[in-house]
Image (cartoon, rainbow, N blue to C red):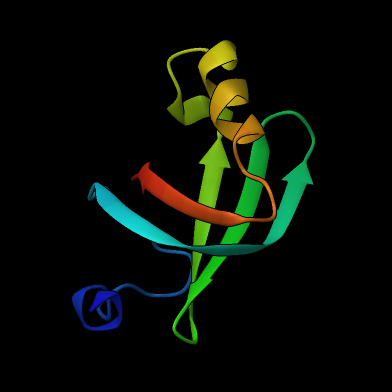
Length: 79
């Protein structure tokens, strides 16, 4: 479903659509205090979630979201 919906995006291009997804977090990478990436897999598909402090209303809100990404099954409501 997502592959067809976002097929128009080039590598590195982002969408501002709000989506709900679920799956297993397989990789989490932190880059300093202000960036993180998480890879979520389900049914042999993988999606990358990108967190950037600049997109949140406060550092506390960003840290709260970032702390919820663990190696486990997850549901995500992000854009």
